[in-house]
Every structure is written in structure tokens, then in C-alpha cells.
Image (cartoon, rainbow, N blue to C red; front, side):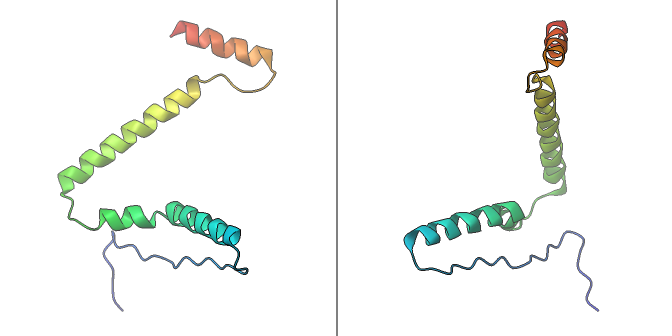
Length: 99
């Protein structure tokens, strides 16, 4: 039995079928294919593995990505909740004023 290193990625195939030959169906299938590829992160993984990344660079990149993620989450928490609930909107407004 062959063992793979922990960072090896085995990709599953992505398949899109087009039943009709009209132009609109092809454009729809192409958009679907692109979104599937993006969701599966196929292109980004391919680009990552094209060149060697030093462990120190990998740590720096992961630290930067975590900081960006924390920033995005803090921005999302600052936004007032959507809807007609006036009480929640006032509470969010008071929290913003405190900051």
C-alpha cells in the first residue's frame, strides 16, 4: 500500500454535461464549470504546487490569511442587523457610538 504525504491533494474529477447544442446552454455550462472549479479550488491548488514554498513563507502567508479573516469577521459584526426590528438597530447604533 502506497502512503501519500500529508500535503498531497487527490482531486476528484469535475464533469459538466450539455444536452442541447444552443449557444445559451454552452454559456450556462461554461459559467457552471467555472464556478465548480472555483469552489473546488482546483486552480488555486495547482498554482500553489507549481513552485516550492519555504516553511517560513508558508507560516507568514497563513498568519496573514488569518489576520484578514479576523478583520472581515470584525467588520461583519459591526454592521447593524437587517430587518425592521428597531430595538436591535438601536442597540447596534449604541455599540458603534461606544467605539
